[in-house]
Image (cartoon, rainbow, N blue to C red):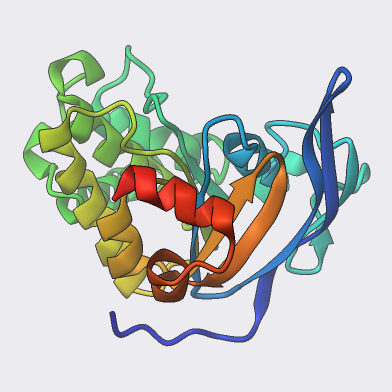
Amino acid sequence: MSKQLHSEAILRVIGLNKYFGDEHILKSISTTISKGEVVAIMGPSGGGKSTFIRCINRIEEPTTGQIYFGDLEVTGSKNKICDIRRDIGMVFQNFALFPHLSALENIMLAPTKIKKISKVKSKINAMALLKRVGLEEKANNFPEQLSGGQQQRVAIARSLAMDPKILLFDEPTSALDPEMVREVLDVMVSLAQEGMTMVVVSHEINFIKEAASRVLVLVNGEIIEDGPSKQVIEKPSHQRTKEFLGNLL
């Protein structure tokens, strides 16, 4: 993968803790993600991966710690999280499309409602994004008329419509049939190659090798491994990582 990384920090996480009741889900997590990086988050089920990524844009409220998006503290009570989320795109496991809206309308909704972009301009942009993800001919189809892979590609296009500075993916292929996985991963690889900053919870080893610049391994709420994707996958330093990868490969 030929992609130039920048040293500019776009996301900083400092001492992040998350409790659900008495259960300590995330334990003093700290990491920095630079502009242009594609960071994959791996680890066994229940390790806190989805909670971590959902804390980044405060879908889940962190218990303690700080998250900075550029110079803005996401965890700061004075900051309007809706304003910050304009620049932080999120793609969910279950697509989260509005069932009563067509693919085109799903993509147009946020730019017209939140950014106050005209419907004419939003439609032009949405059609361009549908073409980008290979679904131009499905513009007027409703979610129930689309396959899972097609719905997820519409969801990616919807996130791109807000022109985000970073995209978060929470296991974007886990709900898909195997034959649909590749069509979604191909779109994600192309975004990575174009320089989009991405944080991806995924166990798709081939995608991680192809597109991720870095891998974080999260086990029991702690980052036990953090390094270049090739190094972590082929020569992990932690025994727990070796065991986890042994079950995947």
